[in-house]
Image (cartoon, rainbow over all chains, first blue to last red; front, top):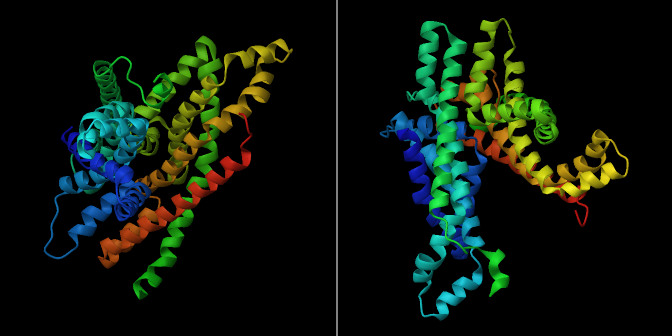
Length: 207
Length: 215
């Protein structure tokens, strides 16, 4: 659980700024963001994990705990994916809202903070719920570098008791439960955050 | 640089296994996806809950776990699969579940009136599905399914866990022999990136090719 919250948290913290760079950034900023995006979305999670754990660990005088390696690898990967989700959210807020905010005397930052961001986050909620279920399942990879999470614990017991199938099915049931309880949680948040009349481009015609 | 030349042939060997895995599990996954999506929408009271349960199970648990159950768990029930077969089974079943969800969305986006119109013209239900619904749903689901295929390429790296020496497995062996973890995994990652980029371009081209204006 700590793994998931750390990875998702890192993803949110990094993903939002990265999304802004994608949308509002200068040309060099977009270029850097694009490369970051390619690498972290193009490499398999497992390879990223090995790269961080064994790769960084093999540099002299630099040691990295398995837990940190998992958080970095899955978290930075989640940053790239979440940036795409927020980018979609930002784009869903009509451009004219920015113009309107600027014409009311807001600075660009103010406009982003008060007008664009709250709406963009709301639009991003379904995507984040999706990302949660992906990250949850990817944390099972942590076993490859020796972090004892749910899956590894299940494997220990399975090897110990030889009741392989039933143990794995139990672990599967726990994952299922976590996935759907989380998705339900996001659904509730979405309902709570709902503002009647809020819409992106779809509502443009109503002006 | 000489190091690179030294390890490339071995990595290519691993890549060959990876490509085999993808080539087998991608179409099987797609077929499963189509079947499950159709079952879920048109299956009636028996098939529809079954399809739903399948989706729930395979989308709700990690692929890693599915792989373990199939490779290490099933032998306890007397079903022994080779590593290659279990990897393909797991990948197809898992990606089939995700495909089916994209395809289901595509079916639902086709107006219900089309089915009725086809039936009114005297087509059987299966005929209507095959000649009216299927061509449209495949086109509409293509962007989502391309996404899933890209995921499949990356998740094929899990195959090393069932003792297959695929690209990742080969990379791991080389890394342990030479202790040059960072370089090796960086190269492995770049190869995956290359495969993903090519697949992405290709699928975009397919999307353009089969595009029918107005659908």
